[in-house]
Amino acid sequence: MRCSEFLERYSDYRDRLISDPHLRRRLSQHLSGCSRCMRYHARVSRGVTAFKSLSDLEPSPVFRRELARRLATPTLVVDEPVVPASASIMVTLMLLAAAALFIWEAFTRLSTDQADASATPSRPLPVAVANPSVPFVSFADLTVPAFGGQLHTPGAEEEPFGTYTIAAP
Image (tube, helix red, strand yellow):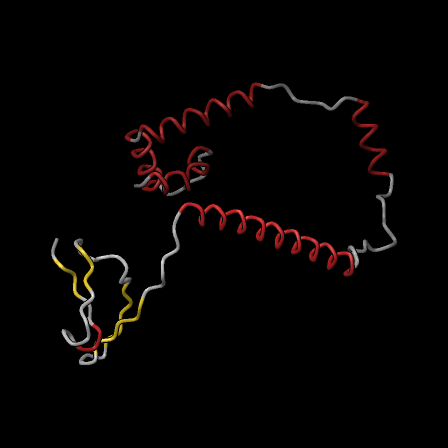
């Protein structure tokens, strides 16, 4: 038996409400062999014992009088329905929030662009390179050598179609 099965039936087991002797025996065997469920059983038993040892609690006469008064007094009934804020107020608040976000974004982007402009030099966009023999297009940044070494751009008479090669270092 798994602990989850034991815990599902634990209350009935503890209160001796399980009539099936086979199930009672399985639950008892699990309880005697599982330290986790034994701890659970011990804690619940201590709580039940402590609760049973308490004397009967009687509310004070002041509490009883106050309870009777509150039960006799009708509850507050609101005749008018609660009206949510009008749509124009909500639209105004949303527009103010959007404007604040727009200004904040513009200010953040401006300061970020200024920091980026001073930190890194501008680079040209990658050039689209198409191979005429195979239907394949890729984008290459021709300003930086891919495998190290010097970037060499041959003339059109050396290699057709404007292909680029990288010279060894």
